[in-house]
Image 1 (spheres, one colour):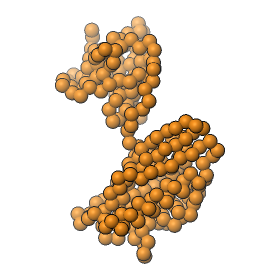
Image 2: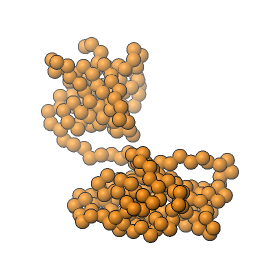
Image 3: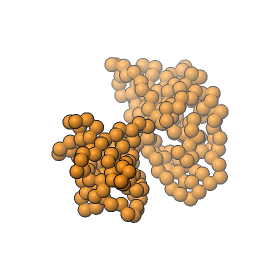
Length: 246
């Protein structure tokens, strides 16, 4: 992400053990946790270390959206004001807090708006913070988030010959995807009657799915230039599906 410090400004989902006796946090506690979290994210563009020093436990663990793990000392050391041309802010939306004795969790959306040399970007995150009570203070012991899928800008890609890609593709004898062309728009279903996944063109033979995962679909051509396979690039892995003979 363009304006985020990779150690801090993007933070992914931390899995917590939820007690059977968990209860919705009192409104006053919810407001306190939201205010503390807002103070942390407001400090990021300025590189203000003080809120992070004050609000994190000494053994706090932070995990960013790429799975990178940081702790209090290296997190604080990484904080610096955004460089010239970069700005950003995070609005906290739809908070939900639960209390587990001297432990509380806050699940909240982080709605980030960025400006990168005049270009406007919006990124949404779902965050989960774990707070523990130290004396009279609630401090963060775990903070993580994941990026929420959102509709990306559509690209205009010329010379896409949709009928090149239609057909049936298999990764097992009984597992097949069917690609169809409907008025120039490509989509595929993974089983009869399934919800169509629209293929949004990114370039020749390269598409992005419209489902939540937004995986890349790469159509491979043989030595004669005919599409013989589709590769779904998912979570840094490739699932290959061979095209049925036509």
